Image 1 (cartoon, rainbow, N blue to C red):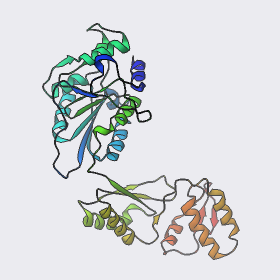
Image 2 (tube, rainbow, N blue to C red):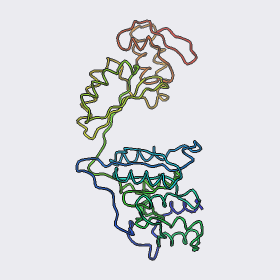
Image 3 (tube, rainbow, N blue to C red):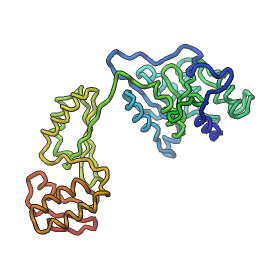
Image 4 (cartoon, rainbow, N blue to C red):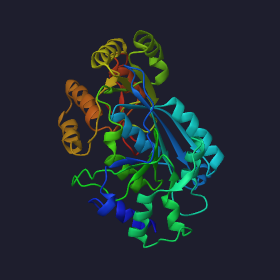
Length: 359
């Protein structure tokens, strides 16, 4: 059954006859909650499924939603995971709908006993679940079923004020044949990641904010987090409310210890905060981002070998290799000190095998 739905979502072109109405057709007037002028749109994500809470399935939908929504100018304020329980889902939907501009649910749509999202959303707004005539026609078209009690017809039972949103294929520009159901400011997405991702991309225009654009910067630091904490405290105090500053240690990287992220709606504030950090951080601890060290590895290793016995040459190659090819050589704590101007020339390179080379 889900194979048919998957094909329907991939298919393009509008359904003929009476289904050729507007792409968003409400059974009753509905729409997202109003937002205070000048405030960014907000979103709450509700992931639905016992399989998530029991650890049977890893949730990737909320991660995808967060990235897409932020790119559209929407700030995700809360993520909640709830079981396949009508009362639990309804309670969370009601609370989120009153608090956020948009609510996106994921999961609980289908023909089985534990697919209760439509029923729960209806309960959240004090509505009944009814057969939507357009969805009944689609069930007949895709499954060849007309019996009211057949499992497939459960897909056509939705809250009475439901709106049908037909997404657009970004590659072809054609309209999807199967819609996404929304009720007021609640958008009910499927739980299967491929279907959810395609649906959200196809309906991006519903969430896009023309007023808000988030700007971000990243600074990589070759220092332990505790050593730069005082600088981060000063930066947070100076730019609080204008720039969001995050500090994330990484114990797996060969060339940095902490990733600093800066986010703001103002590009000017963001640049000021970046400049503040670069001035206040200890000299030499900010390192460039390396996304492809493999393609330059051979050149850097040969450069290190050709530096010969020159102390100046060794210093040059040492810094170059550290910045451009962190995975080929690991740097020792004594080199970290020297890179900040506090160490001696007796730093050692440590190869992956654990052997040490004199610098």
